[in-house]
Length: 207
Picture 1 (cartoon, rainbow, N blue to C red):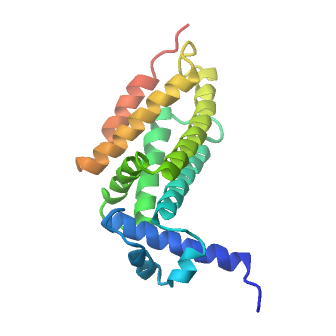
Picture 2 (picture 1 turned 120 degrees about the vertical axis):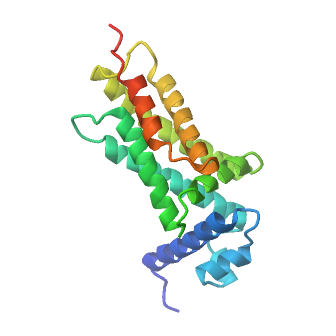
Picture 3 (picture 1 turned 90 degrees about the horizontal axis):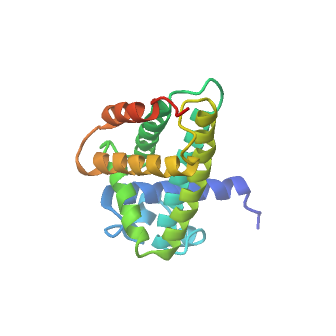
């Protein structure tokens, strides 16, 4: 029997994840069955279960991938000099990332993927595997942002008497609120939040 290449294995895993993301975004986690995922991906049960043990593992994989892509987008946006205004980096990258994830999930409704994010947060309260996945992603993102905030502090664009990690956790809370408003209230609050962040992050650094 011919050996299956890693490229083929990676492509098949990608096919499964894309099908799962489309199904979860369209129907929600609890209304989506594994058969729905099989149908959406166009694969047999044996092909899917070779990669994932069940729906919980698929949910964790979709969440982990989304975290990784958003983190990478922030790293790219923050790379280089001069530093872009922080409010532009935060809201611009997040808005683009949410739209990209939604498009990958086949959603035309801009609220669809933010609503999936809310489901992930809620599911993590009962799903230990997913909770660990989110904790890992959250820790990595905090680390990326911590270094970014230190760059802004060293450039004199943010106060230095507040620990970088405290600023990061506050900004993450703002971003989570951004997602909630997009998901629940049909509000494109990007411009308002960007203006608010600009007001908060461009105050003169404490001497």
